Image 1 (spheres, rainbow, N blue to C red):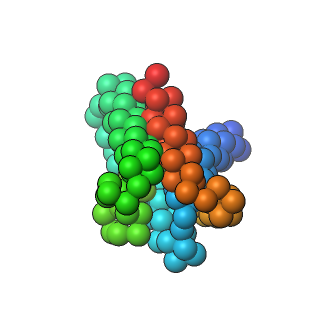
Image 2 (spheres, rainbow, N blue to C red):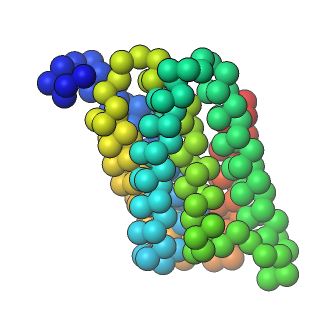
Image 3 (cartoon, helix red, strand yellow):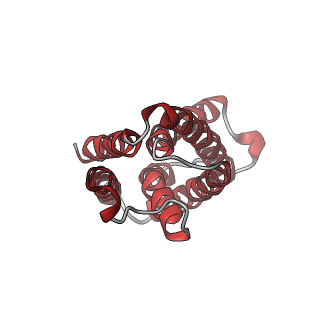
Length: 186
């Protein structure tokens, strides 16, 4: 499908979906930002989220040709379980103090795990879009842009509030991630 052939309705639908998926990245970014992040961490995490917000719906679109509604529920449940684990671990780590090792969002695995958990719901959206004739390039680039930009804003907001929350920032961030995990599972 040519870019000129993309209807205004499709553009608006993709933009609304991208903002909705980006809001997840924003909210969860606030949770991680409350743990305390450096500006370099913000850049790494938001870049990874933008990348996953491109790759996951693209994979979902390809899978959407072959698989029906089954994967959408599985992907959302997996995202919820990952967020429950991340949030629960952050709360546990903050309550136990230095004796418990927290998932380090500064490591490659920490960044990838967080970006994957934030972006997995875009896979199920991609599955749905793959069943329709959505313009792939426009869709995934829009998802990536909004996921990346909104995660930057979320991480910066969390970073700002982490200074005033002190030691409770990690626990509060964990509660936010845990709550989103529960919402994804419901």
